[in-house]
Image (cartoon, rainbow, N blue to C red; front, side, top):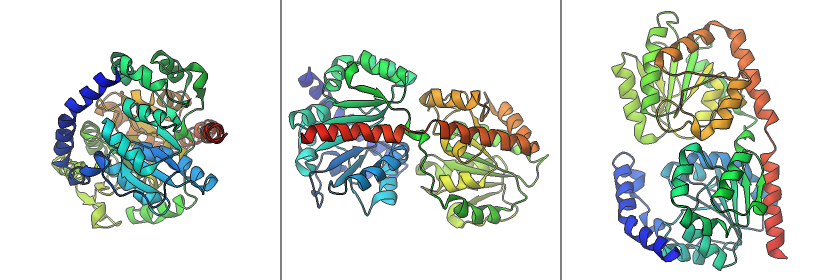
Length: 424
């Protein structure tokens, strides 16, 4: 079965490269460092430590607190962090460039995987969320490298695809040492796909252990002062085109009641910065860009954050947060970040990537779910008019985040156990 899988991967590799080239039409970073995709890179300065794989920027953010703890707890183990996307790569470099080696994860080709392990020679492999790459797992097992899947989840959207590929996935999951699942449902789905129930622990969601810098409010203060403390600010974070279309349609009529209101658009991917600004101008809004400076003119109606790694402090500066990825088919983005900072949260109808989190936020009164642009306009209108409601929702969100914390320590305990067993 592994030979058949490897053959399929070889056959699909040209399509994977075409996909990278297509993404490169919008983001040139996808056209760079292709040699790393085949594990052709200079060996890190130190080997024999740990590899943490976090596919994209979202996984890097979720793993950041865990990575810091691992660096502090195991200073003798060199750390290598792998990603799949340029945005994830940029985030790793911004957070850990001085403490960890970074390289793109290889395509799941037998030769590339062997070269990767030959160059890094890790004693532990930590996979964030659920990136199941059979050759990667098989090669780790053959070299005696334990594999831990941390913060594991199997979403409603992905379970069907995994079931169709179960003949490839089951043998790979059998080679995993320990899995820290986000929820009981995730654990049950992993068992269905072939994981050993005795090797699964329900550790909770690392996203609840939001890593907020102590200086975050201090960082947000000059931003808010630059916008104007008397202005009401709606921030639409991690947006895709469907989100921006709905937000712009909802925001324009709000200006009749709130003429000084400001919309802050934060596209999820850098290749969409220009397109988001264009959409806002086409909607008749006066637009300023973050690349032009932190200060936007008083007559600015839409401020486009065309930079990476600044979303958290801009969340801290807003009054109401709409979390993107929820109007189209993306499945939502991390809504715990604004909730942790006491901001009322609005989400669209499609949050299947964060099903439990979105339901918990709505149930506790920290979030409002809307179906379309008209409902979004009404929700923002209500929140803009009711500062007491904004405070109540914000407090409910902070309480929920605090009550859900603990996954970080449970995940660390899981990794400690695997490392101790490996040494023994």
